[in-house]
Length: 362
Ligand SMILES: Nc1ncnc2c1ncn2[C@@H]1O[C@H](COP(=O)(O)OP(=O)(O)OP(=O)(O)O)[C@@H](O)[C@H]1O
Ligand SMILES: [Mg+2]
Image (tube, rainbow, N blue to C red; front, side, top):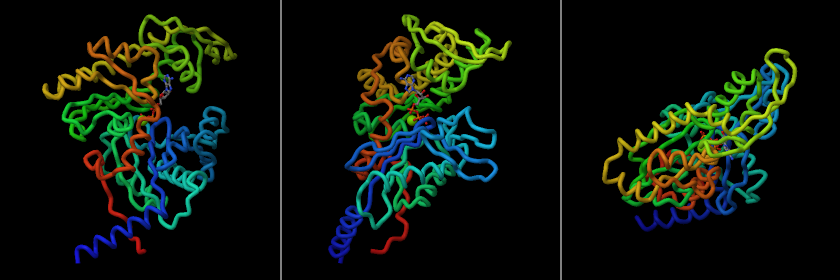
């Protein structure tokens, strides 16, 4: 009897795999990425949704929506589904997930499907059950037949090929747009972690505030981000320069100013100090056996924030430990969802919440 069930299960799995997609999603604060098993990363777009507040209709998602920030008439509003590491608007989050799944299936997979996809979604660490359920429901509503949820630092470590299953600890700091997740991973699970809402977005706001106070110029969010990327520096030794265009607070007219990496470092100093304190706190509260092994291997940093000029050196200096930027910092989480899709059984411990398949009769 058992054999017969096993046989039918194998046939069922073969048919499901043949006629459905496996999709990995990193629904980040700043960027949303999608991975299709067998194809790699197929979508990489800003997590932005623009909608018409008069009609309630979505007018653009992703790149098109981000372009609209600060340029739209009043009734067109742009929103991001996740702000500061929490889902700020469940409806918008649902729309974004549906957009990503549908786009991946329609435009990229090229596979004839009879069943909904299996989906692995990376979410900020420490999300509440209500949020996890909302993410799961959104994916089911968008047609997913099975949903696995994984915390972002875990996915980032898996996607960066770090030894998460080993009893030797691994320390990873994922510095995204909304949150910095500091996690110590051992035996496939997170053993110690801390999440702070100091990450790329906060650095952008710091730069806006600094430029306003020092130069009496108002710059937009996208300009602040460009300065952070092109001129930004976490250490004093950088001599990068750049030009920012904004509106003069006094005359109200457009004005151009030159900013240097010294300005950028000053702008981000207080936030960087908070980030360093959080890293130290995690180190101080990790069991000593795990800690000594992990420090031997060094600290890994991922996420777009890991690319801030000199940040790895700053963290290294303060922790007295080598710090390495993972190979593909912006893709680490979505790559991790891809690895989990290849072998969900192996990463059981890493999966936060596994939902049962919805009713399928084959
Ligand atoms: N070269 C770079 N230098 C500095 N910052 C960068 C660079 N490239 C991207 N970033 C920043 O990285 C952030 C986005 O990183 P990432 O895509 O990892 O975040 P996310 O996954 O969307 O957010 P979260 O993980 O917090 O939900 C943005 O704030 C962006 O400005
Ligand atoms: Mg992220």
